[in-house]
Amino acid sequence: MNRNHMGSKRRAKMFIQKERMKAGYDVQKDLRRSHKSWKLLAAALGACVLLSACGTTESSDQREQPSAEQTSSASPAAENTNKEETNSAEEDVMITPEHFIDTLMNGSKEDIYNQMSPELKETISLEEFKTSVDSFTEGVTSWEQVTKVKMNNLMEHSWKDQTGTRGIQAYFAEDHQIDGLLIQPLEKHEETDKSFTKTEFQFPMKGEWFVFWGGNDVMSNYHYAHETQRYAVDIIRTKEDSSYQGEAAVNENYYAFGEPLYAAADGTVVEVKNDIPDNTPGVMNAEEPAGNVVVIDHGNGEYSITAHLKEGSAAVKTGDKVKQGDLIGQLGNSGNSSEAHLHFQVSDGPDLFTSRSVQIRWADQSQVLTRGNTFQGLPE
Image 1: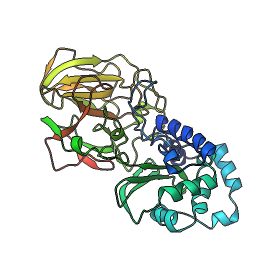
Image 2 (image 1 turned 90 degrees about the horizontal axis):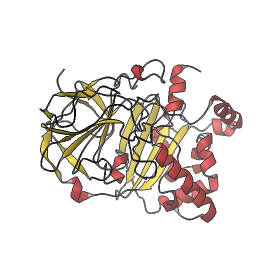
Image 3 (image 1 turned 45 degrees about the vertical axis):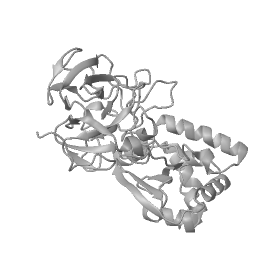
Image 4 (image 1 turned 135 degrees about the vertical axis):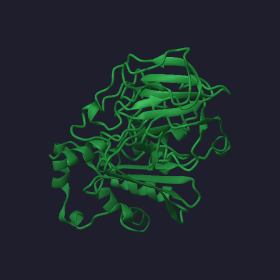
């Protein structure tokens, strides 16, 4: 199997996150027992996870979930089985991302189901899928595309309905197999969406970066569902729609790994963790969700949390006074992280899991840190 194909298959497994996938499987079990409406699908129809990152403790339901690396659900054996099961009628039908919504609303749901990965089919039957989708889309008159992202040979498309209260995300491999599917209600938090930090922050890295998770809805930013991480962003570095080159299981092959991190604003360092080993990409450390971390008190009850630093790279210690732009460490892959990336947020307290996330006021208002966008950090 060539690297690109293997990469697309592994990556389909990390876009949505293990905790969400677990919730999706639990929901499917309930659905089989009760045959109720789409609301029972709440968390997910799918089993694909793409950047799995920080989050919370094992017992919490707020685990973070970014990663562009590992995305595929199917092993070579599973892929062969799937191909063997594909009959000639199915081969004649190919649902592309561009036609997915129209097919879901007006075409054959069976065609969509036939294009799902074996893992997805294991979570829900065809009849349950049809019933759930019919209930979910009842009353919907139109869909607006929210994201269209290609990363590591996996394509993500997401849409919200005309009321902004229902959303669909679909993940396609290069051969158009549907490796992940998520339908869910959408909730807005308008009051906190409009409340920004008093401190003005600069992005804490140099050069060009890609927003893997960021924005004010759960389709653009899975953190948004959780008050403690609602306005967090997960950032990776990419080249030619990929976050790494060569072997996917090597940290040094990720473009973001080892990149310097800087203080986003003046303040006092109140917490440093520096001794947590970096993960092998795809293997996460749920015992230490944030991994190596630097927390800075910027005054006004605002604390920046820079997580997933490289082991031993912290350049500051607790009590240090820092100026905006001072070196604080290097980006790594420690904690509940599936690949090298930056988790950055500002909270109203120093603890990642008990404080509330606050919308960040960035110094450069011309750039929007929402999912799928590329932006310029500090000048190199």
